[in-house]
Image (tube, rainbow, N blue to C red):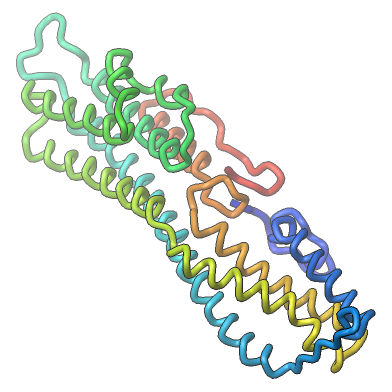
Length: 313
């Protein structure tokens, strides 16, 4: 995610970091070169004069702009829903820590070797941290197990490691711990139901993220817009050269930057869990949850992640 103040004045036109321009620069350069060649040759292709008027481009340009806007709106809806789901995870994780520390107590018949409530609190909170890390790794198709393993009891790790869905395996362990607490008399049934509701909400948020990750915008729709935008921008010089002459490359580059930029931006935010500059900062969100939960246990917390080159990962 790009995090920076909006520039003003002339700086607005020369910023590259955070702009979509680096992604489309090759296509834009080729389009500009074609526009220059068409202008120099005045629309002649060897001995053939290609004559186009502005009418076809007027008819094509408006629908193309509308469809690009619709696609970007659909892509942004996916992005915004994903951000709301991770916001929900932040809330639920904090609630889980509070509930565990408020409701889970020593067992009714505590023997000499009975665990202190603080140990149960710590395991549940650590598993919540493991859950969000496991979800992040799954959504990004990453396999860095160190961020996950260090938060889980050693006896649970083989089971989680072998699971097809590691977030679900971590959640199953949390559910078993909660059930054991109820059987041991550490928590009343009505309060256990409240904590179980929090666990279910976390599972629902994770499943919704998986739905977004596994259901892209239909490829045929995206392909149609790609092809139309490219054809429009590469043919545009032939429709303008007889009207505006040497100004053709300048107009073409502005139009192409807009259409190619909107197209590329839609591609980026369509998959909000990736590692592109405009994707969601899942590392930062996981670190935020980690800090909140460790502070709730009165344990040392790592520092917050800061933007590097105006970018949060």
